[in-house]
Length: 109
Image (cartoon, rainbow, N blue to C red; front, side, top):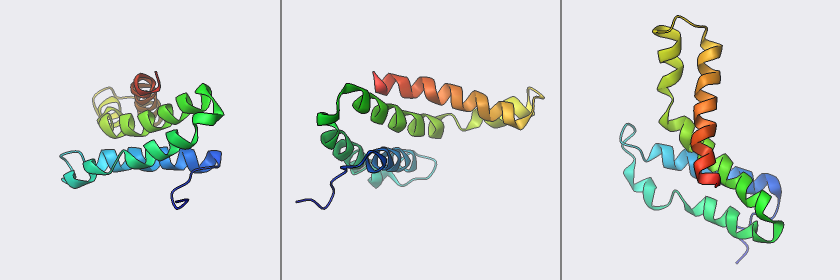
């Protein structure tokens, strides 16, 4: 069944991003908890099709999934840095991206 094949690199990264978004939507704030049952399927399809591509591609797919999921977990850092720190919003986005990248590296490894 080739319905869910992720043979191209962009499809694999897209599936990892979709999986991260579905995981974030299953968090309590959005209350779409049934998505948690299917959220990992796109990432698993991307990883299954990337097995022949090598460890770097697998690690990159894990990093994309982890970054998107991490950004959904630490979205509040942007407003905190800007409101309470008195720093520009762009610096808040940079701080959020750095923390999300660190969280993504856990899944990558």
